[in-house]
Length: 496
Ligand code: ADP
Ligand code: ASP
Ligand code: MG
Image (cartoon, rainbow, N blue to C red; front, side):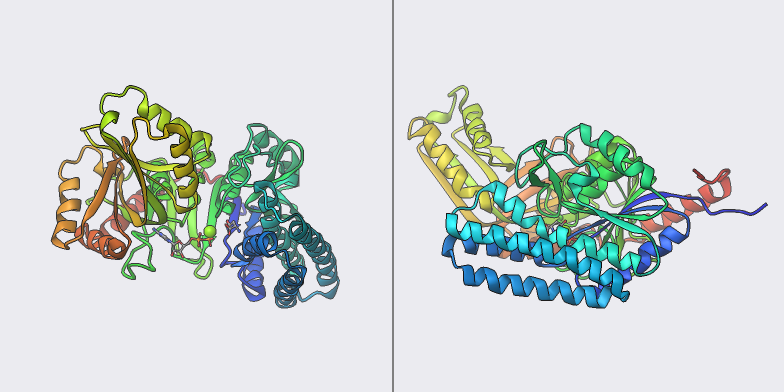
């Protein structure tokens, strides 16, 4: 009898660098064709072409502050050239190229009108920021889908909303509503297999059909939402790095790929700034127990990182070190705060009402001051909210320091292992790095602390060395011997 390879249902997301230009999109299309022709059911989620979301946001701000229509026209030309060039390099079938050009022209005209509107109004609401920034993905998806079609494989593109991603109206940080999972299944489920489905990452729609975004780097989250809704076998996140690494390779070039990591650890890492993953990516995958792989688009055979529920114990109690930049440390102090019941509740309620997200918190045992970290973008709003709430009663001093970073060490092996904090702070002390604030999450999978911005890279390097993370062999060997065991036990392949 003919032996078939197992057929998998895979949702694959390609990040901004992976679809950075036409040549890269062409490579992505080849990958999609290969997995499709091997008999897999493939859904591709695409980010905007690298750098486009930033340019959209910059130009939306410029339009609202400067109000110059001439700048909008210049930006239109820049965006048109970039995407036309991508079409030229990615699609070598003139009929398909023409179809895609038409869609892009229409969308770029719509965008131009919206930006000119902002010029005249002189204001930029969260809703219009989401609308403008959605164009990055809305221009990328037709090109990716066209590139697949030009290779002779059927493909259709959908926006997040068309695919069924219906969200709350929290512009800039929208959350999928529960009905999304049913809708996506109904809208895309029946189309799987016969074609490569391409969906815009990052964006959804609220219940009134208004475009929303899931937060920066939100395409990872889109892939996980679609994967959970379609009960995919795996979710693959294609990036320009070799998976999740022991730290950001731009800071420590000796960083190693982590071959396997648990959902819980990956969540801690993404919450604590390893901007390799959108913070909410893991939640939908985890609820359906779907393995997530982080792979390198430019080295597709490299296995990358597998994220699963299992927590693999290894000598490395600490698996990774991450760094969050662009944060502010806010300190709230006043002698009367000691024993004043409800102060903390008032403080955090005021911040929550102002939409400020608190990254970490610490309160000294004297109770006369509370420090917390927020993203730099929220610092001003946080200060205003606190001044309005306390108005010099109880709280005497509110200060903010933006020249700081948060460093986090993460690893499931830290839970219940004594001495990790001693090693962390001992090593930093030996390197003469001063720690401004400390916090340990109750999951015990991470210890995070604040240092001066000037010390941040040195802190990451010191800890990467202290926990010998450059030495990744042991976990690889463990996995290998386990895979060999599983190989010999395997009975039935997973055929749908
Ligand atoms: P995408 O292509 O999906 O948008 P990102 O650019 O968001 O990918 O994420 C990859 C980047 O994250 C890398 O360029 C890398 O510098 C950075 N990074 C930070 N921490 C890590 C880490 N622990 N492992 C891998 N990459 C990391
Ligand atoms: N294009 C969006 C961003 O740059 C979303 C993404 O790339 O995942 O944040
Ligand atoms: Mg990203």
